[in-house]
Amino acid sequence: MSDIAPTRVLEKAGASVLVYSTAELACQAAADRLAETLKTAVATRGRAVLGLATGSTPEPIYAQLVAKHRAGELSFAQAVSYNLDEYYPISPLDPNSYRAYMHQHLFRHVDLPAHQAHVLDGTVPEFATAEHAAQFDRWISEDGGFDLQLLGIGRNGHIGFNEPADLPLEKALALPTRLVELDSVTRADAVKQFGDASHVLHRALTVGVAQILAARSILIVALGTNKAPAVGLSLNGPMTSNVPASLLQAAPGKVTWMIDEAAASEI
Ligand code: GLP
Image (cartoon, rainbow, N blue to C red; front, top):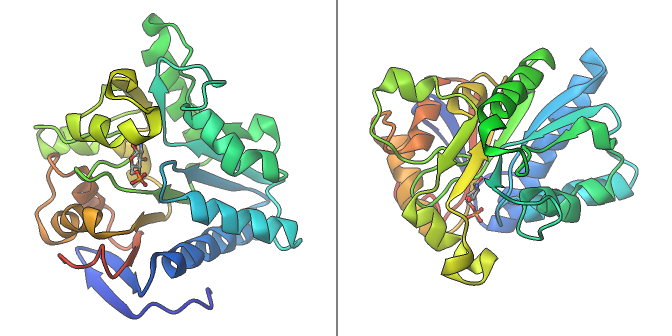
């Protein structure tokens, strides 16, 4: 258990919502949860399978995990990781790639073996993307599925790069890993990363909703007032493909939200 106490705990839409007074505390608690899950899975099954996220939200979480590793408290030697998404097309050497992000924030600092750290490949030929995505889903399933899936949330409610869409619920919940078109809100938010709107890529590979929902536990972190509307809709509103994070309501009892007071303001 984490020593970091939330200021309040809500049960909402089948999820536990832990609200922290600051973003820093929410990230510390999230890092503690990840580390505990990793250790428990390794102790009980000899390995841990983690679904990892990118974006600005997880950066302090990874910094905490690196600190735990450096302090000799946490090893990734028996961990296997799968990242949620990657821009397409992109080289892993491009600093805007999520492979580069993971290398910078986690992989190069810890003892996770290279062949156990999987990121969707932004260099596969376009004709092979469907096959690559299906293969990624197969690897995750053959590894036994995720012990924990870490998620952030987009301002439009996206998880990974599962963007808002008009789909029957049944189809939305079954979305596989695949190549997608990015939403205009997502592209606008990516300008700060790519430096110029004309440089923002329009497509990405993303792990699908079905694989996320199959995780044994899901930890979603949201920070700041600009995430409050998406958090509110995900927890108060109905399950709908127009708010992808609301689809987490289909996994009752498995989802924990760790959020700061600012992000909790519309629940
Ligand atoms: C990005 C990622 C998501 C992430 C989200 C929020 O585009 N694909 O996985 O959760 O958008 O990013 P941030 O944490 O920077 O707000």
